[in-house]
Amino acid sequence: MPLHLERIEWMPSPPLAPDDGPIDFEHLKCMTLGDASLEQEVLAMFVAQSAGLVSTLAALPSDAGALVHTLKGSARAIGAFAVADAATRLEAAIAGGSDPSDALDELSDAVARARATIDAVLRRS
Image (cartoon, rainbow, N blue to C red; front, top):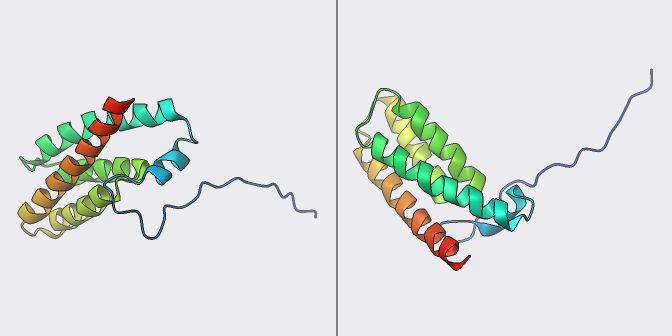
């Protein structure tokens, strides 16, 4: 029985050590296939989404775990790895039943840094 093989083009993985900025623009470029207008669109969507989610998470609603998971995925998609890492810690605190205050503060700070960088990028465009 012959095997049918086909070549699959895989997306590169995020770098093991992302750059020091709040947004890894090389990762974003890979995720948007180098389409500058798509980069701007997803960055603008992240700014809007992250503001709403952080505001909602401050009240720690019953669906906070799902909301922070959504934010974590969005952050990873655009290369905001510090936001994703902070979201991971908040998600763990919520799931573990521990006090999420410090993790929530860390997430809010990381989102603010990412949003400031994104705002500067979008103003230049």
